[in-house]
Length: 251
Image (cartoon, rainbow, N blue to C red; front, side):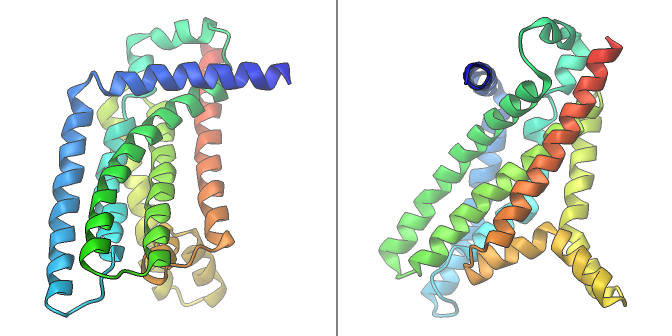
């Protein structure tokens, strides 16, 4: 119990520190403006289709666009400095002398970035309220859309944290994270041209896009999808912790 309490305290301290750092940097405001700009534009496009009787009142299109295209850029940009900056400046060696474990550093930093993106997701909640006021959206689908976007934010950020642990160069970290996210999304399309059905199914299940579709188009919150998000996040956080641990032993 004492170990758990100490870990929770360390996570809270790291989370508070990193979360505050985001809001004293202009980067988060630029990313927030990009998020609001793109989400507003896409929402207006889909809302106009609803107004013209061309579609049902839904946030699925907006959420799908945000989770596929916008997050592929925002998540790497949000996380590229988290560990890379520590390595480049040499402050990671000071961090290693603190009474915190490697996984606490990684998870604390990740939670801080997820906290910022949670604020971004809450901003898009205004669109959901407006749609509810002007239309009659399926509440289950609407909730599944927001839950899906929030979970995908968490997963994409773990990819960014892992990429940030690999190098001291922030641009390199951004490019690695972008490449990994691109692969996780677009192997969905590759799976349909694989002649072997078993291999095709495996690749399809590994794709982020496959699990997005269930949440955004069908509004189905399946335990298999939740397990996928938790599993992918765990893998990338574990890898980031291992990379950070190897740096500790080399220091």
